[in-house]
Length: 350
Image (cartoon, rainbow, N blue to C red; front, side, top):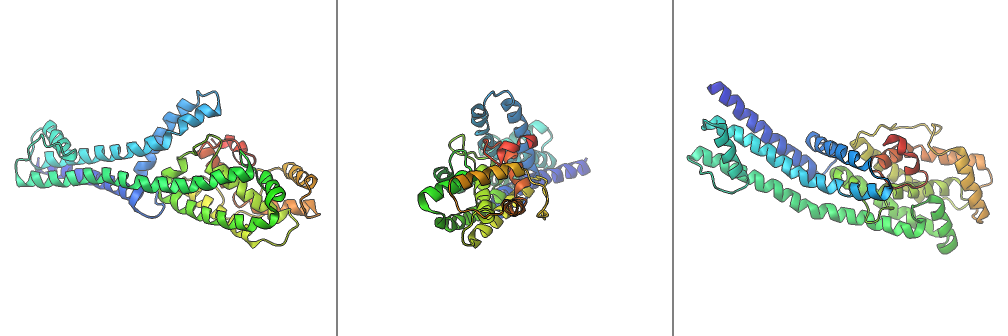
């Protein structure tokens, strides 16, 4: 019987360790380290939301439902941690001195929630109860303290997405972005845009891997999305390099690199399949005819274009291949609103 109680006590310690490790990986560790417990909870919750959204008739209905996905998941995380901690300490209380499981569960719940209705009868029980109360309060405080951090990161992300709507339309379009800059501000202002979005991509890379739930926090309005905004900016930068006959813009190339590095890391965190080193001549989701239509539209609007349309296509495809698969994968994962050259062709991945 003593051996059984020792095994149960160690199992309880292991359960508490699992909950503590999950909390540290999810909120404390400043890097993107996958946590199995969090992933499992969010996957199960995702199944419920997918079943519910499958009955929606319009995108607006799906968007309203999916807006609750990440917040509900975050609120369920501490509940799951507390249940695991409570189960672990129930094992410890029973293994140490209690004859009945119901007494162990009662004492564990009293200590975990700091209710104090179950008396601790000796020093050993008091020590275990105090440690459980510390874990219980600490896990709840951890979530509360990190919510402002998450919403601050979300606010910074969405500020740029909202400003892009003014410059690229809604839904955001790379072609519309180039046309509006040509008509209003001038193409010579584009390097400043690429520099700002290079910083944006670096921030998204950091926050959306260390705080993975941020990827599923939706924009305040249904037709905005951080994924489609990223796709529009990357396509605009790729078009400016490959199509526009303007002085060389190294800022555009740096923006594209920052973008596909960020999207690849986020995609890798969520196990979205992609080639980490694609060949410049690999196939992309944008058809050659679609590119030619864009080329002709830009020509009709009077933008300075490189004369060789075929060479421009090869250059554009060589840039797009770096982020094509991860862009579509993230658009499908987040159920992004339809936007040209991104979520409009990601339905097959959902």
